[in-house]
Length: 282
Image 1: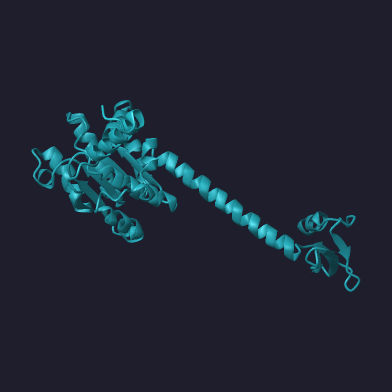
Image 2 (image 1 turned 60 degrees about the horizontal axis):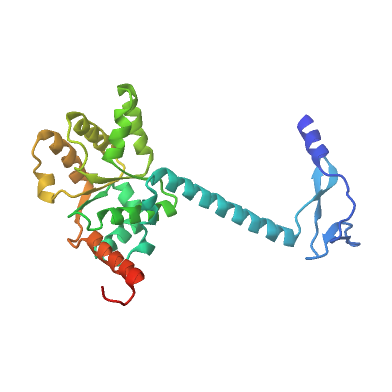
């Protein structure tokens, strides 16, 4: 009964008519003068007939629009948080399909990976992007990261240098927790495998990160300057344990041999020269 009383007491008492309201003489309800639909209705509680407020048609449309806008803002804020959390290097946020200049023919496969993400995730399938320096491996991976983040997928793109710096400054008992935290991301992208320090500690931690991801059965994308032959035939057992797990879960994809960095540098130089000296020969 107390709950019922609370509900009844919460029903607003009659208020003076607002400027855009009028009383309908047929049913005695307050109506909206804009859409001419009722703003009240009758309900029965404990055999009592009560008049309660409702939204008129135009207010209902406004409310729906407000809810949609609120959800859109929440979605945009969530995506912004995902991007801030997963792409610590702000330069990576510009690595998008919209900014692709068409240099890399393999970018079609980046689009396909994003399109087939649900299946790739279900199969724990990642990518191994290998090829020479400056050929666009990082841009390829960044485009995948940004496209998935835009759909609300948590992605972390980092490298082992950054990971090792974090692990080096931790007590040993905290390292497992840090490594496990990487698996909260649905996709983990590690840039430049093989460029990290080659100490025993570094190789052990690299293995721990890869093995943890392997056991979590979550997709991993790796970029490397190593050749596929070097990955399949490493010099020692420590690297073999790492590379075997990568090769088992990541589809190898060779990125073309054109050095995009050199091409960009040449274009930037040409543009700068034009700004500085114009059409005059120097």
